[in-house]
Length: 346
View 1: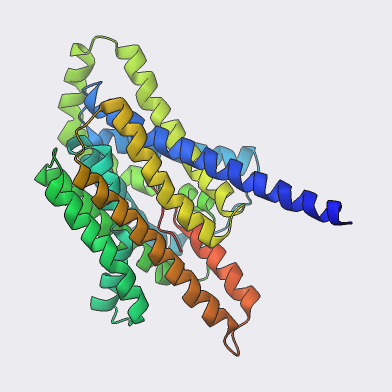
View 2: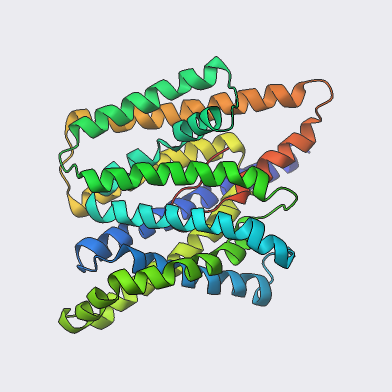
């Protein structure tokens, strides 16, 4: 009997490890490919790259739902698509574009560290704009995040003000998206695949015209001047396909791990991305810069742990069913996938 109990537990652990590894693999590969596109292929058009990702994600989500039947389609009223989904898609689009813009100007290590500032911007926005109050432990957990970001920014050897601002505004966009989801998507229990199914086409529609107007001429000139056009196009389209696979991997890892494991794995993933990007691009990283990045990731992990403790306490409170809260946490985790970035962790 004991062996029978250990086998499912071991199988569950193996499944969680494999889910985390494939999530890390897709995420790091997409980030590295995007940086390679901007730096090595000299394709310096972040709007166009984002548009390719949205198109690939739209096609991939359609195939996953209607052909592969991986997830049932969640029906959304036509009116809600414009009143609820469209505003979310607009913020979603801005978030992804700013991530790619920052990636063009600053190293992967610096960009990923700045994106770890998202928990702090989320809490601050909810406090300032929505007048939401938090326990002192939440505020205390933000101290190492803010301190680590400051240390990293001051000591960054490849600092670029435009890339830094794009990444910081991207954090605000991610936080806004997370907060708006609680009200705009209320009543719809979206998973990551259905979210992409509805948001990616809107994001493509929003971004297509600006991409053509601002980058169309440059893209055409790149086509005529670049040496290995076929291989370059394969890499660009491949990054779009992998961007959708990243969303699918998020769906898988959420259903294979707990909230705490997901939080820790998400922060370790940043460390992996930083290490791999440094091995490939060899951007200079000072000792103090590495320490700042480490402090930020430790702060993010501590923040996630504090949030988990608070949610556990609320679930155990009288009149608050623990199982319902656990299901809600999992649905919230699954609600907001990103095309090429880590999602906000609950």
